[in-house]
Image (tube, rainbow, N blue to C red; front, top):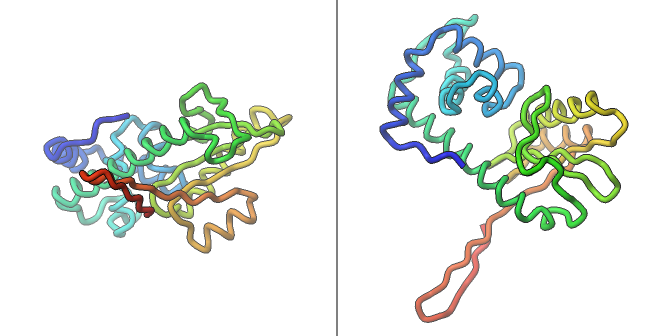
Length: 216
């Protein structure tokens, strides 16, 4: 798992964003607007995840007009965005690691078939690839927090990639997130994607030996 960024590394990367070549910014923007997830854009272009998050923030704020960069975010704003992006990325990595070790809790009939690492397909990298007792391939996508609407497109692109590779096997998708908007729920229903909401259990042990558990 990647080491969390320090305050100084975040600022160094923020400066890199400000000095980034315009063509790279445009490539990041085009890939994001095509529906590709930030982590996949990062992998495809070989740029830091925080850099992609910063460019995404520009898009969200309307700072890119007609392919050109408009008003710039301040260095501190970019650093803050990068920290948030890296934290989210780290959480999803932790979720993936935990699920790999406890896949039976999700579904006792599932077995992981990706040799312990993200499976690369034409559309990007699949978080976890599994198979069920019926022999169907199950594409599992993890999102920290509420699932964005683009997660449905992302998952469908993975399913499509696998079907093109081998159309003899049944492939279905599973999206795991903290929550789902109405639009995501409706889209998932139409696409046949299974939605799974995750939660956290925290155990606290007191010095006098008593313990309590809180669910969040």
